[in-house]
Length: 147
Image 1: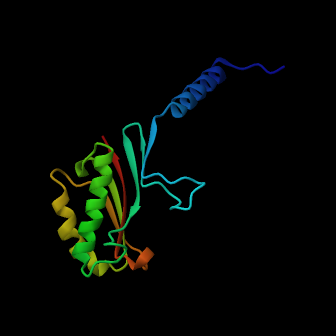
Image 2 (image 1 turned 30 degrees about the horizontal axis):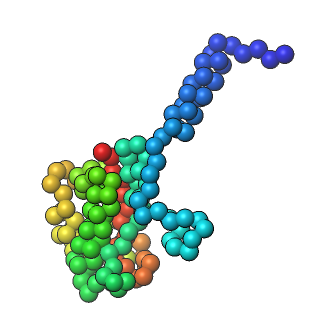
């Protein structure tokens, strides 16, 4: 027969409570895709309680890469802003952003647009030289926002 100590009962109780909290989390999806459809194989964003996880986005104009890096960055930021608004959030709710860039020579062009989308303190950020991106985009950005 196995006997458990008070400590083991306490740990088991905490694990059970933690599992209950995780399963009770409120999740909603923005621009969701279904596994039985033929759309993209990801959702645009997932809201879990007060945290929004935004998928990687690119700034295309009618499926085409704009002529300038600045215009592409603007389209990307507008798409991010619209997704945040669907979750009743703003750009200032972003806490972390990762930007993938096909050529880090576009760093200054991206930043000249990026900085205009915030009114408070900037979120934590990584700007990563990533080589070729989907559809030959210059930038792809993903992020996390907390309301």
